Length: 421
Image (cartoon, rainbow, N blue to C red; front, side, top):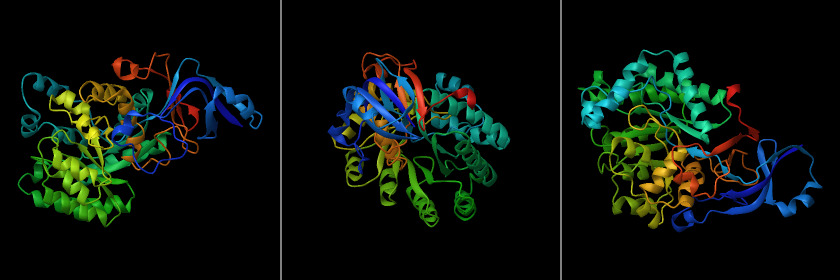
């Protein structure tokens, strides 16, 4: 018994078989499409697709249990958000006002705000409260089209609190049907109690946190904030070498605040992705071109912090496979709306709509190592699909910013019903 989506105006990001390489350079503007289409779903996976004029012949061989009429609407793969901090303990709107009054991100951090503020709040919050708060945010991002999600720790900065965040992420994985991966980011900042003992905190990460995370199987990746005022290249390398012994692949916060060397250290350690990249030069672009590391831009942070945007146009023109992600967190990007991230990628990054769509779907899947099951409309992949409202073109997605253009979200072959969660 199969499910049928019929009368689709256009299906975007179509593949006949899962690609083995991300979409790079000029190819990012060439979105595979099928017009006047159907998609056949078997269980939770895509069985096949084609044009409506082929459907009658196809249906002779299949019994259909449910039909969805998508007349006048588009179907896209679900968005893949490869960089979030969605488990956090409360908002930081007071710092929002501080920014309006002229304080910089670095000045707020030096006053005990920023990451350290969130860490202090989280340490006082119990696990059930954290789970309930994070669940509401996950529901919000799903309803805006995100069906694959990476979530980092990093707002605990102590042994107990970092593991608490990772346990909450594990509960979110079990609770929601979307794809969720966990990243251990104990090296997000130096906590106040270790301000005069940096090596002591790094020893805590390497000798206590990492073994416990690995023993309890709480993380898929490890991350380090390798940037000015946070962790040095040498410290980053030491943490990544320790993590490699436990099979944790790296993802790096790099070049947000300065040209930090984070891109190069990430590539040297075969990082799955290097993220932020607001400050990136030709040297880093060339290094990325000669690697398998995915470059991830976070335009929501640039928008909120009023810092430079990652030069994604230059990166694509150089031949790179660019990714866009939300960086959803309470201090520098308090939104997980990937439709808005597409808008920022187009408006400030000068990406074409098709390039932005690849950046939030298939290339995002590569940045989470999910490309075999997610990120495109492809036979055999999980049926995580977005049915849009009746919009005039795919360019309307980033153009009409601030409004939800998604009508229905399909997760694992079923229409997602938020009331069930």
